[in-house]
Length: 141
Image (cartoon, rainbow, N blue to C red; front, side, top):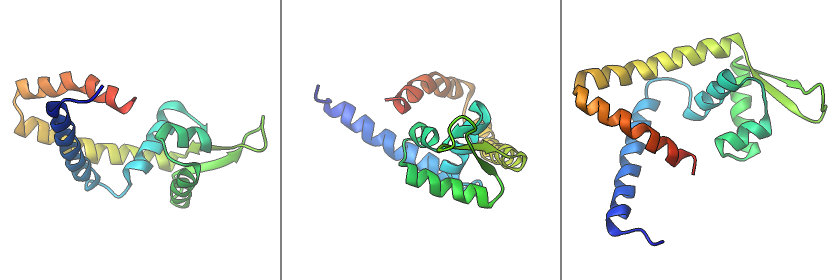
């Protein structure tokens, strides 16, 4: 199905606005969005393989390996051989990684929560809350 001109305009405007929001959120801390996503996934889901992390974040395994090397150099993750399959490497969050993730979340969410509280009415915040499931659905396509 060919998108209507209105849908194409909406897609363009949504892309621009979300891009600006992501840039603003990135400015709040030293960790990249990819690094935060990996640390967050390890926190929520536990130890995972490099391939599983790459697939979940929709990046090539080589790109994920680079991200993991940076996190490992900072002591935020640890790698170990899978006891059931010595060919697989598993990645786990370190205590330092959890602390960095919590600090990052507080900084990023702190700015966003303050902005929402100070600059948006209760009705506007409700509208944003109602849009979250739709935006989440977009990320899963």
